[in-house]
Image (cartoon, rainbow, N blue to C red; front, side, top):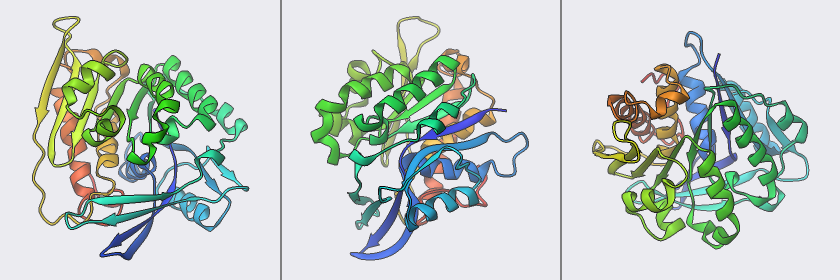
Length: 323
């Protein structure tokens, strides 16, 4: 049985519209994806085990988050409860286009993962590891994240890296760039948004980003751009040393309620497709996937997850959603 293991932060998202709070829901980029995966695999035959490596404070918010994980079939066995810190909050202010501007209340310097829980983690070949955001480059917990990602890579797991770099961390670029590039080297698949790369590198053209910053470390790259097309870059198995590229239009959506979690659920859909179609790490460089319809089919599944979540104020697909 394969595992899907998320490595990332948790927050309580408080969502505002017209400067008035509308809803408070557990969140976090990797967390949102894991909740969706827990839901869609809940009643599946030979379902993978969905786990989350994260931390919370020992407070009411932390209890809300861990209880929500358990309710949605995501194991909390690898969650560190830190008694000396408060759980994180995120305020999301929706504009007239239902896009969010964020204000974060987090103490990254107090992040901590439990040593005994980390040493318990066992990775297997073809497990899928989803990780990203500042959690994945935070210098305070880098010793732990590096050991986890390295162990997963060496075990033959598929590492899916969602860069998800926010403008609030631009000042941290000199400190975290080495960690980010190490993450790229360990990854099987890298995804980011044009906005991420504008903040990180000062460029948002996906081909330029791929050639200059991603390809030297990881061959398989997906760049999303809101309502713009999804750009994909992959090794060309028919012509070694070259790559294929394609732009896939995104379906226009009416009645969007919120775009919070759209990218996170794109990730969830892609991972769901990998598991459901029984793709293995070796397939990521095979002509049938990287150079054929397989990759396009995975993008289509990812888009179904992403568009679905835009229809509500939740950060994840509905419990009844089946792609």
